[in-house]
Image 1 (cartoon, rainbow, N blue to C red):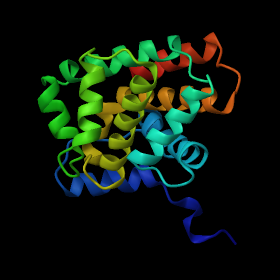
Image 2: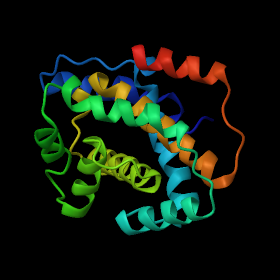
Image 3: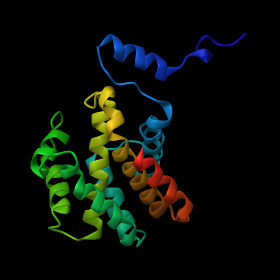
Image 4: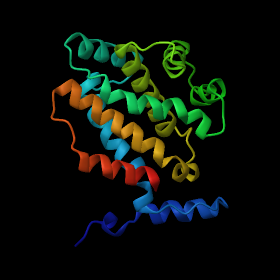
Length: 195
């Protein structure tokens, strides 16, 4: 006999829930993969980089150690940095408004300032850049897992999750000394971003 949940389709259930809320959003599994994969990527990041407890201080400590041991490779973060620098404009906001939204529920002036400095191009320090990008990812995580990102809005944000997943993979590869992904994986990233 199958367990009761073996026939459960979470996406279908969420769509029924959204319809009851009069939402016009209809989630599709393929479209939502970047968001769903984020939970797995974050799990690995929090375990390997943050000692199973991700917060600003553990992220700062992890990046400092990775930089001091020479594991961070600047070229790998430049494309990611460009995406995050262009993100506010892509959402129709200026940087201050975008960051205010990002930090609306849980203000963290130090993290917000670190991200702002890097996104404005006021610092090209590698450690500071990687730290700011990971703090950005941490805010995405907090907003998603604490309910500040509405499920109905997630289909419009899958490109963000593709890039955050790529960032987490890049950092874990550097931190753990894993081989770099190949060009074929980069093409999959581009395809995911366009969905």
